[in-house]
Image (tube, helix red, strand yellow):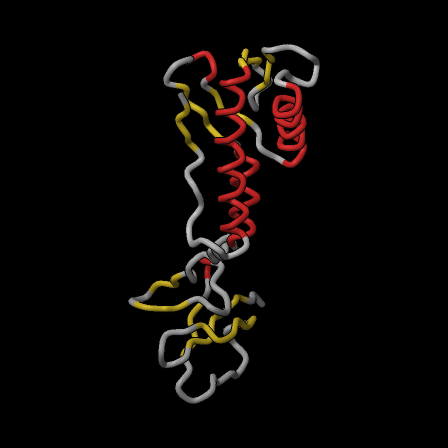
Length: 173
């Protein structure tokens, strides 16, 4: 005796159950329900049946990201800087909390002592890929200001203060 899977289909064409039936035993589907062999379709509950064919339910879509998730993703992506006066500074820079703390330390030194933390007037700063870029104090201030503005905008979005993320592409002099 060979058994086969059959779909029980309601009057709207929805598969409500799948049963194993030998085709010989007496079985009467409930009123208003039809029975169709599943075959190789793999049809199951949630599928539909129309015009002699089973149709799979639409694939589940991931829910949209929350503002907090979008903000995390934005910070992880980094900030792309384009310098109009010094193209060698162009790059995508990390802007996570460790990097922003390091930038703040350099800016604090610049503001208090007019030099970088190591006493120099220029610094090699890595972009997100580790490529070093040579910044003067003036360039670093513009860079730090742009990055701070971006991070602040992302955090305001995550907190619901604003309704859109800031652009992750900024032009500095």
